[in-house]
Structure formats: structure tokens, C-alpha cells
Image: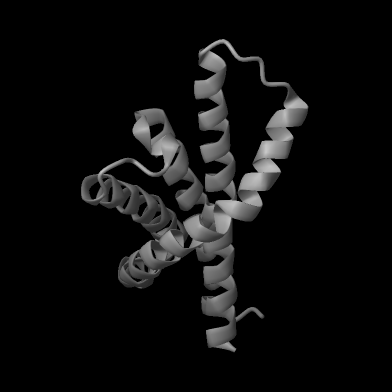
Length: 149
């Protein structure tokens, strides 16, 4: 049962980071286009967001999964040592996982492939999506430690 709960918690964390990250990415890109003077109605924003959820989010989920796997496993130590702050450690791990992955990608690749990662606000927004994923992971995983199913 513990493996199943861990897998569910992990998939929720990665899914949250990927879905929210995709939406953030889309909105930052559309804001850049809008700043050039193009009017982007809400219907088009929703349509582009849906397209990116189907096309960008799965690829971004792979990046998030690798980053969060490492970070959440590392966060298990302070979370078990300080159980009252367990959810905090997992949220911090999710935040740092995405932030670190983006910084690493930006440093290693010739161009910044994730448009939102070109600005501090975009990096922060994407990392916060990872933090929310880590927080949800902590909530789900903490139920195991309390003996709840």
C-alpha cells in the first residue's frame, strides 16, 4: 500500500507542476505577444492553453518528474526528522526541483526553450507550480505516516 500511495502522491505532484507550468508558460508567451500590440481575446487564450496542455505539458512533465523525483527523495530526510514541517519540506523540494531544472536547462541549452523561464517572474511562477505539487505530495504522503488510508 505504501508504494501505491507514494506513486499516487508523486503523480499528483508531477501532474500539478506540469499542468500549472503549462498554463503559466502559455500565459507568459501570450503576454509577450500582447505587449507587441496584438489583442488576444479570452477565447483564444483558452484555446491556446488547451493546446499547450496537450502538446507542451507531457514533455514538461518528464522534466518535472526527473527533477521532483530527486528533490522529493532528498526532502524525505528532513520531513521525517521534523514531521511537523513535513509538508513544508516537500513544498520547498518541489519549488527547488523545478527552479533547478529550469536554471540547468537554461545553462546547458543554446536557447531558453521554455519562454516563461526567460524572466524572473516566469521562473518564480513555474517554480511555485512545482512548490504546489510538492505541497500536495506532502499532504498525500503524510496520511501514510498518520496511518490513514
